[in-house]
Length: 109
Image (cartoon, rainbow, N blue to C red; front, side, top):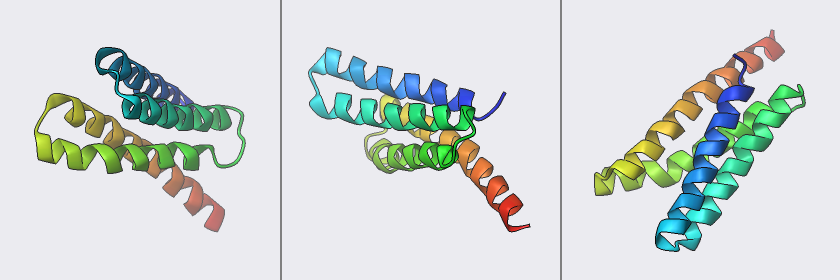
């Protein structure tokens, strides 16, 4: 399994979560954030799959944005939804951070 599959899965989960949040509560920030982060993951996955530059970096950026918004909220509220988003963000940070680190070390060698 390449790095494109986790990017596509995270894209579907975040975009789907944003749409679900809007459908349940009418929250415009939920749909805007979910679809934006999902689009970043999707574009990153597409670029990784087609071996285009900056795919891993886009997916890593999406993980940083998701972590920056969800981790403080999870610590503050102790609710399951922000905690779940935080786990997704941490998985993305680990997956795409490692991919970036490995590609960077190969470029420097």
